[in-house]
Length: 175
Ligand SMILES: [Zn+2]
Image (cartoon, rainbow, N blue to C red; front, side, top):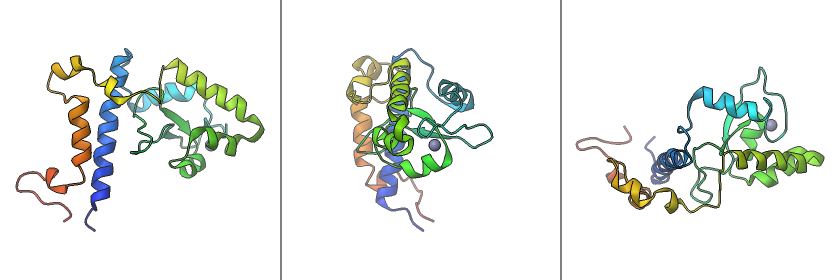
């Protein structure tokens, strides 16, 4: 099946949010988030438990969930502080929902305590979900190296709905 425009735009947006996440990590003096060792560290913060329902993840396949979803509405980054451990059922049901509401749904009477743990996590990594993405891509970064600045990358994301921009010369999509 050929990929629709929406799929291609979503893929481009994910790549953009991953790269912005790496830039945001570097700006906070962190090595860009990635790999199982980093996820182990995140799991450790939550005591090896699902950050939403608190089930023990030992022996279960833990998912790397993005607390702030990586979609065009929420613009969560793939970065330290936004990747959290979730059990399979929580990961499958949260989708694009707000994490505060989802914790209330999953944690019931323990919601306040679970919210506090999450806030401690966000504080530990100084992840600020309300932050303007343009601040992450500083003018300094745009001058250094061959990496695109935030403005240019945003344009790439916005133009990603036009498949011809993503087709390599002589290549074809959707075969
Ligand atoms: Zn869970």
